[in-house]
Image (tube, rainbow, N blue to C red; front, side, top):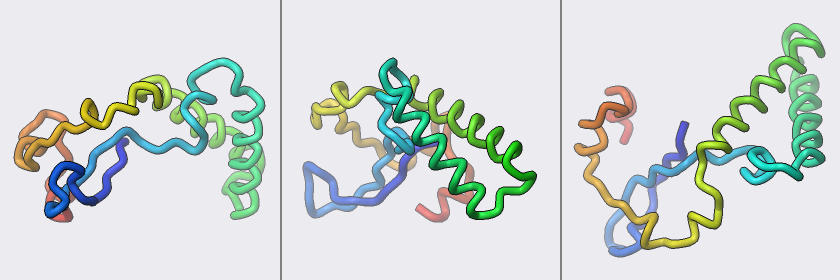
Length: 118
């Protein structure tokens, strides 16, 4: 559960790099992880439910509501372990280059299928 993209190295613009970052959530992290976002979370849940029903969610409205609850639980969990935007403003602190071989040598490395596509 992370964001993967290819872009220009911020320190050497002649190089392309694979960026690994925390995931993007459906609504801002602060609404999901903190107090005060109830109205936004409710509106987001309504949007998810309406979208699921519009596209013909299997099992009808009850199943769609349960699926929305699961999505919100997952996103809340991700929001709780994600860094707040205040901690992500320092570009120097976020710049942590490693070789692809180092990423694939780690315990949490992606499977071989993903490695072929990077």
